[in-house]
Length: 487
Image (tube, rainbow, N blue to C red; front, side, top):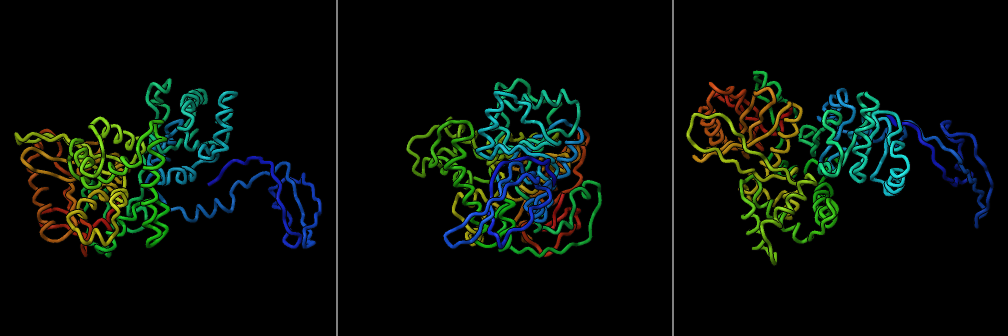
């Protein structure tokens, strides 16, 4: 990454025996004055009135070396090539800032308290000064000064050039009444989520969804991830920091995330005072109903059975809305295809977190707990599969849905692309019986779709947690362990 230079004022003390000539990027206007400590060690105090930071610091190089490429990298580059500004949205800790820094050339870090304080003052004096810097200029946690949105939009209009700004934030963009202009046509959007198993390095990526949409097949591909490892990865989640750790230390990250949501973020998202205890109850209830189509009334009843004193559905809806603004909750919309059947298509959303570790941490579960309750594990694994498929769908110009009708026919996920092509995907832990059940449901749904009014599915897949191989069945359905999948 590269950033434009900035000037700071500070003084440093260096023991004389460790003193070295300052790096040549420093300016030469320095004052040296010997001092004496209690131990009579001479200290050089070097006061830099003006210090120019390295364009690429050692810290930045280390970050680059540790950076795991993300699918959103190429999406961001593509958006920047055709928009004056791009907003990266997603939950905190998912790597938005680090990813943005790979392509940004200057930075305004509003996540820094001191920078934020000074920037708010500057907004009153000269707001455009905050936008000065080498482009693309990254404005991190921009939503802390919502007025910046209109300032950026106006500046994009005046400059009439692409790749000017990258905005990142951990809450949704302000409501329309908070801004003069929506940014349509000027500011593009990129949705970012925690890492898929392919991005974090656990999936081999030997099976490509892109290739399947192109009608290609593949020879059997080995999979080495077993059920114990999948349980661990489910609880660890796709948080970039956690993917660089192992064992209990990695698992602790999700528990810390849930604590932050309940104790701090739920209060800050829109300034409304909410109860940490009630937030925890809601997260637990959501986790108990994960990957299911349940109404708010069910969640309310579940919360009331777990010590909530008084509660109505409006309150439940308010808390869910706040968690959506924080990108913690991300339900799966219903798919509405043309079908030959007279069965009514159900339109209820399927309940999902943006990452499965939020659910396991909310319930206090670890990998062994999942292994000991395979029914619950199956639902939570589906939450992880949805996370990965959503990441891949963004790269494929698509969106993920679920299907269910009044006859009881279901399909866990449907990846529908903008060009009208789609794939039907059932999610199972594994095992011959569950795979056969998934295949039967896929074939039944495929035969129900009216292909005179819409395309037939590009492929049908049973996506599993485990299995020795990814392969194609004689009936054409692909069976793919998640440890083999990529976009």
